Length: 327
Image (cartoon, rainbow, N blue to C red; front, side):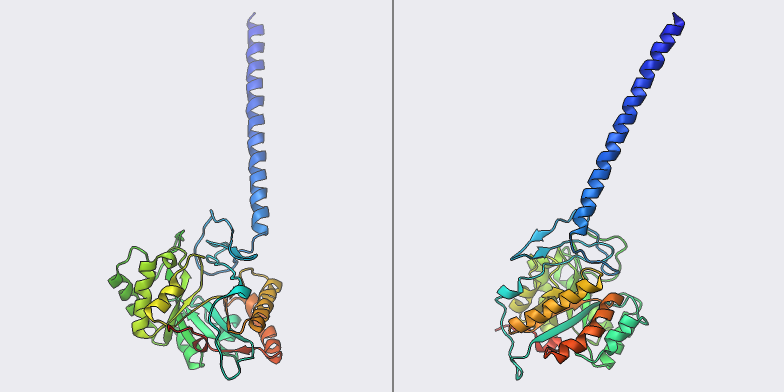
């Protein structure tokens, strides 16, 4: 009798164990399927790669804006929030004419200077023989040296100022414009960074998916820019950004980004984005505003393509010549 009871207990125990193992296997299979789906989604989405802004937003979903365009909030692999690729062929922005009005024009802004100084991309962009805007991040070890060297080499310098994102990155340091700040707080940050970088003549937003949507915060920031006669570049890291509109409303010269070149760290993708900028410049009679970063792949593509683009009649012009000014 005891032997039979032991057999029954062992049988029941083994069945329970088998059920637990089966449930564990099912759970693992479901997790694998979910991870595979996420990886497929990511691989079909052109996220920013790289080294740059430190905002990670794991809950971001691509959002369509305009004809065939995508908006990305947040970042991947250390790159920032990505803004919408604008519907360039249906823009209402004012045309900018000059003596060479029929010549296609591109404004090239290189963001994120300050992380490095002696790399080939950094030195290459500083010394390249075209008008180029150097956007320097405050609070980094090489920022001051980059700004001084860029100005000495005749480049226009702006501050790439961190602004509050929807998903705050860990390890953030240095000055940042927050929506919780008073106007005096914002002015204090701007005064401090302006003193630190006397070479700067304007600013652009680094991250800022939350701050640039806040009209009050952007009003205070652009009011300061108007008083200082600083330029404002809206990187458009969120489709709801009001930075550009508030700048013009407050009387500050402003412009907004059209194309991110290196939102994917791949030479062929960077080259395709650059060619798209050239086509847009030919079709739309105003300068196309292009933003890139001092990364190896970006530098390799641009140093090869820029001479060809110039030989094909496209002109690279300074940011200062493309600014839109209030009426």
